[in-house]
Image 1: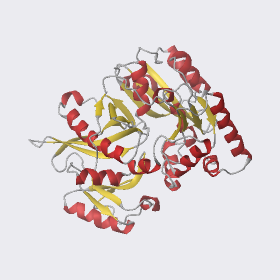
Image 2 (image 1 turned 45 degrees about the vertical axis):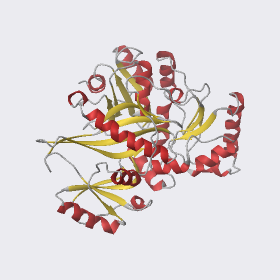
Image 3 (image 1 turned 60 degrees about the vertical axis):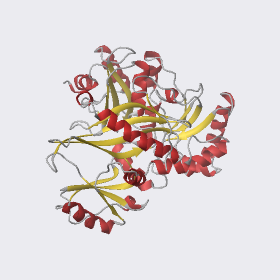
Image 4 (image 1 turned 135 degrees about the vertical axis):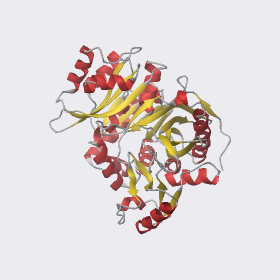
Length: 449
């Protein structure tokens, strides 16, 4: 059962978020809770995972508005980027503590190794120097048992419960809730084991589908998802980690050219969930590009103006989902991914919740940065492979010389994070195009388009 919790629409202005200070552990080690096989697979997709948390540096003090936030990263942040964030953009940055992913479980268990003793001393020193424990919390990508142990060792509360975090990220639970509540759901069959997947595909094939997707209960960035051809994939082999949390959803793949479908869209609703209410603060579109390996995001979706009913349909299902999430005990930021299906004739639009992500997502921090620095501007976030052999400082200097570097109130490109390749130079990066059409800015500056 869900409550009548008020969910506000704040897509037209900067909402208020946590009025608290935080010790935020920004590593991918715990993102799948105890399923570290999935974490290893994710690292292969996103690149060197130790650099992942650096994207929080410019945004953390906007998400948590306390004066003394501490960001725990797996590697030291880019000095060139930090100067740009503070000097060019005027942002206040959190204090940073570097801790390897290997030390995360050791810190939780209280292992008496020299590295853990140094970490504990550094954390305690930060708390004492920055005003003690009053109004200070512990948070991370997700709240697992080890984060709760670390918070206990620091004598601090966690932002959300581990049960709320785990249930809130479970794709099967939100699917079952929406189905049982009468909301439209994607046609699906439940596979109890790897051997049952083939039978599920046959069932969906009988319903007219040519492809399906196997969806693990926990997943991120494509990990825990596998698209299959109903006719072509006769022998289905899935990694064991797909079924670690239990049965998998096998869902019909809705695509143009089949079942009367003309077009499909992938909008995502970004939200914040506090104790007494929730806030929807942005609607974005998930992007893919042949030249850019990973998904990006765009706000607002370019088709929203031509589909006047869509906003209301998204908001209705977002309210139902966010209220369910609150009832699970989750508090914090999140995103709801949707599939929008356009059919020909009088059938019109269908809107389905694809999944819920009860954590800071790849669209949370660009949305908040743009709303803070350039309210009302369009933006596009892209994950980009770099091949020019430039250093971080050289990339910033080139954008600055070409008058393409973002500054508050003016359109431009904001570099958000770099991942080093062999030799130490950036191999991947996140770039945020702000203003005009962010997509066009990125094409011209990064690809010569």
